[in-house]
Length: 246
Image (cartoon, helix red, strand yellow):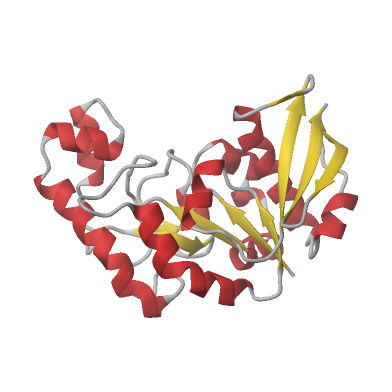
C-alpha cells in the first residue's frame, strides 16, 4: 500500500463537534504522555505568556486574535485533522466533496505532521490551535522532540508500504523515513514553484483518493488535471517525480 506524508497548514477552521482532546484522539495512544509534554508548555504559554510571547507563539500581530486560541484543550471541541486544516493544499484537496470511500482512503493512508501535536493520522481529532512553524515551546523544539520520540513508531506503522512524501521541506525535520521515498516537484515555465506546489500537492492527493492509488507505479499512470509528467530522477534513497504545470 501507499503511505502519504503531508504537511499541516497555518490556516485552520475554528470550532468542532467532537469530544475534547484525550489519549484516544490521536494515533499512538501509548505515546500520549510524550505529546502532553509539548502541550503542557504550550498551554502554560497561552495562559500566562506576555503579548510579545503570544505574538511569537501564534505568529499573529493583532492581540484581539489571541482570544480564539485561549480555550483550554480540556474543554475545547475537536474536529478531524484533515478538516481542521484550511490552507491552500487542503482547499485543492476538497476533502468535503469526496465520497466516503475516497475520504476513508485519506483517513487511512495520510500521515500529517502538526507543529504542536506531532505525527497524526488525517482521521485524528484536533482542537483549534495556533503554533507558528519553527517556534519553540518553552524549552522544547517540537520538530526535534517528535523526531526523537516518535520516529520508531512511524516506522512500524509504515512497515513495508511505499512512501510518497508530499511535505514542505521544513517538515522533514519531524521524521526521516528509513526506506526510499518518492517526492514531487512542480515546474512552471521551467522553474520550480512554491505556492502552486502546495495547491498541486492537494490536487495530487485528491487524485490518489479518487483512484484509490495503492503504489507509486499507479501514481505515475494517473492523468492529473493541470499536470504533465516531465521526468523522474532516481537516486539510492529518493525518487523525484517532476511535473510540468500546464
